[in-house]
Image 1 (cartoon, helix red, strand yellow):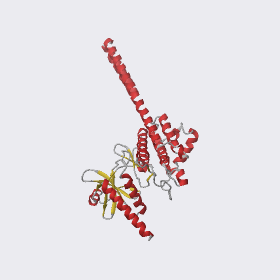
Image 2: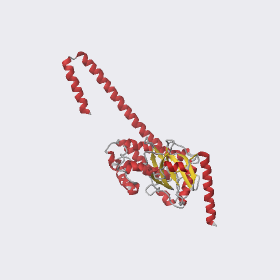
Image 3: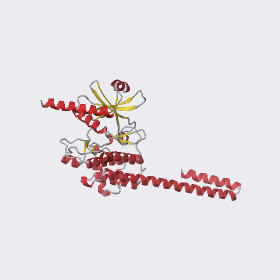
Image 4: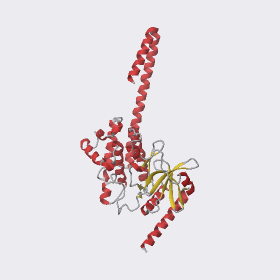
Length: 357
């Protein structure tokens, strides 16, 4: 009887989910998706509830197709969660759900295709060009904005619960979006978890010990992600132990250069690095109340990037002013310099420019 009632609940849930899909999303035909994925052979990943395929539609549109594994009860729950949440969540830093398919006993979700893949692939795959420091900070801000929307913009607020580099996807412009909402929960729902869910290395210690997740649990995971961007090291391979050792010498504020990803080859501004690392260290504070909010994090990273922009603009202005001065000086010299001397002076200036380069 218990099995029958649980089956009935699941059946009703799927019915409700499909009702939501019908109301808000485009309906995709199974045959069209089968053709667009070359009979489901264009595998690009494995989601929490089944495989993900790249689909080239006849309209010219490229999408990602998540297929619910038919034997996955946990996957079915996560499928439902993702639909119910993404049906009402819309933000430029979240991966958007655009359609669905419910045919031939299959349930599929169709998403915007993120052509540059996951952040994890750019941090760890040898065949992909490494990310510059500038880009890493921009990605960090994109992710922070997505989480800020979930925590402070969504009604009711949403806790993601599985922030990690493989759940951050990049589009053709290298803009980052938060993906995979299968473990997410609305804040108003019971926040005590019977089973600890998430990814080892990113889990908030407070959540592990108490079984209770909050917005600050997401902040902790985000702090780990920030250190991952800084160090280029996998959290499941001792990243936080590495960070704690460095923090003993840095007091959490300066001197974080020792953990920087060697592939950056020193191409970063030390002050900026220390500011980002100090922010990350606050996020992973053992006491949740001492961690910043996602809104605070967005403000800090925005200020860092604004300062960077102002410095670059200032340097360009100085360079332009210097060039104008040189031009004026050269014009004046041309008026009073004999032709034979003028050629020698021009050669000297050209040589100096070459040396600077």
